[in-house]
Structure formats: structure tokens, C-alpha cells
Length: 377
Ligand code: TRH
Image (cartoon, rainbow, N blue to C red; front, side, top):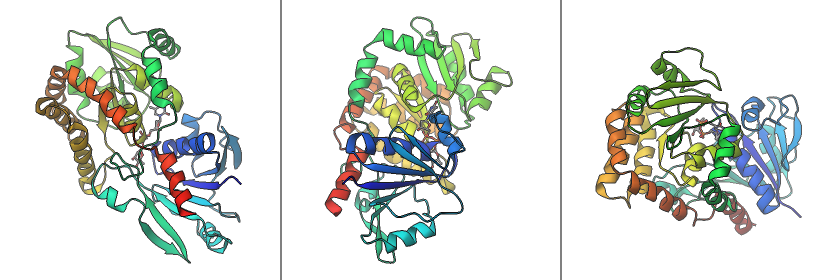
């Protein structure tokens, strides 16, 4: 009999929570033949990346996943065989009672935040708290062997490589989004939170000898883009040119299209966790705007990733990449840092591909979860 999985997603803000759980749910269905219910407390956030979602429905099927609205007033529901609390969200108390009452206690996991820090390896798969005899476990995604790995659908890297080798397919894809970049222009995607350093970066891009076409999905960085352009009310479809820099605002697209956008670009500025991982699968150089946390603990995460990511780079290229990422995340001088990075472009570009292939050798997160369940039963 197919294993039944319940994935709980509480949308805190932004799109990372639903982005990760929606990918995971689909992969469990398609690649591991699981029965998956995805409980989401904010269907509007979900709708942004999956326009087929009917925000008024409590129950619906999307791509083989049973999508359930997670209501504030919980209704009696039998527990599944595997229960995932995404990003440490609190399960409904009534559901926890149902887990405890079930003839066979489920495997209950906390799917944690992504981090490259070393301690993650030691905590991955460790028992956490118990509720009336039902044991919860920590499950950590990660970059290091000994963690749960990263979300990666079967054949993703092969699809990406084929697409990147097909200039016509890329052109067609971009044109469907309304993107007509001039020949030889550097393509950059920009998905970020508000960032005071943006202006200095755009200054240097606009005064470069090589043209740049900057693609900005609608979102939190638009205010900074507007300020730099000296315009108001930017919306999807708007295109503005300042010397060598063309800025184009894009609609928020579905996840598969966003992947393709990343695959088309020479450089991707991403944020959060999910777009960060997808940019790595694009095999292209990237810039991470990490989600800000209290007491700057996000900076430890940033350093841990940088240490791992740059370990195989030459000291000069590593210093350039670190300087750029630090500048972006701590309001440093983006102009100087970008110029430095360009000096090491071929090496950084090659490294992005090598890193992607190396990460691709690890078991993906969905497979790791299924393997954990199989070893647990
Ligand atoms: O939206 P985010 O900033 O989410 C964040 C992080 O996950 C963070 O760790 C978390 O704690 C916080 O939310 C609450 O960034 P992230 O993770 O990259 O998620 C964005 C999702 O949106 C990702 O799945 C990709 C998707 N996306 C699209 O589907 N279409 C688009 O056009 C764009 C720009 C993104």
C-alpha cells in the first residue's frame, strides 16, 4: 500500500515555505508514488506560483497532490504514515492527538531550514521531542554529506543542460515573457529583498562597456529599482534603459518558468532558500540575499556557505566572490565588488558548473526522506 504523507506548511511571509513544500509534495508523488496531502494556511501565496490553485477551496487536487486548506478551526482528521512539519511549524493540537491515537504512530519530522553550517550534520535525523509517545525527528537539508541534501527532481540537471545548449529554446522562452535582449547583452535576474546596495551595482552596470539586461520579477526590490531609475509605480512589462543597462520588470511566474529564467541568465541574484538552491542548479554564478534574522545569525549561515562554496576557488577569485556577497548582505560597496568579480569571471563561471555537478551527486532531499522512512519502518 502507498505510504500516506501529510506535509504541513505555514506561510510565515514570502514564498519560501510554500515553494519548498510544493516542490517536495510533487516529487514524492511523481517519483516515489506516495499519497501526499499538503496542508497550507495561505492559499494566496500558493496561487502566485501555481495559478491553478482555487483559493476558495478547502480541498483540491493539483498535479497529483491533495491540497488542503489548513483552517484555524481544525476538523477531525486521521493522521498519515509520515508527518512533516515544514520549517518547524506547529501542528494543530487535534492532529497531534490523532497521531498519538493512531494504531501505528507515524514518522514525525521537522523539516528544518537549510544551512551549510557544520553542526547540521550532527543534528540531522536526531530525535527531537515526544508527544504522548510519538517521537519527532530533526531532518536537515544541506550541502554536506551526512545531511538530507537538496530538493532536486530526477533529470533536472540533464534538462537544464539541454536547455542551455539550445539557443532557440531559450530565445523562445524569453520572448514569451516579453524579453528581447540585444545580442551580446549580459542577462541578469534580480530576485531580492529591499537592498540599499542596489543603486551602486546598477551604477556600475549602466556605465559598463558590455550591455546588461536586468530582469526583475515583481517583488520587494522594486522600490530600490524605482529609486535608482527615478520613476514610480513600476509594474510587470515595464522596460527602462539607462546607458548600458536595460531594466525590465517581469511578472511572478510559475516555478518551472522561474527555473528556466535562471537557466537563461548569465548571473542570478536570488534570495531566501528555494531560489538560492534553484540558482545553484542553474550552474551559473549567483548572488545570495539571505533572509535577515535576529541578532544577525543569518550572517553565520552566509559565512558557512561561502566557506564551503569557495573552498575550491583560487584565493583571488574566492576573495572577489566573498566580497560581493558580503557587500550585498551588509550594505557594502557593490560597485567595487562587482568590478572585482568580473576580473575572475571565467573561473567563477566554471566553478558554478562544477559545484552544481558535485551537489548533484548527493541523494536529493525527497529521496533522503523516503529512505529515512523506509529505514524507520
Ligand atoms: O520568498 P522567499 O524570500 O522565502 C523566504 C525564505 O524561504 C526564508 O528562508 C524563509 O524563512 C522566509 O521566506 C519566511 O525566498 P525563496 O525561498 O527563494 O522562495 C521564493 C519562491 O518563489 C521559490 O520557490 C521560487 C518561487 N518563484 C516563482 O515561483 N516565480 C517567480 O517568478 C519567482 C521570482 C520566484
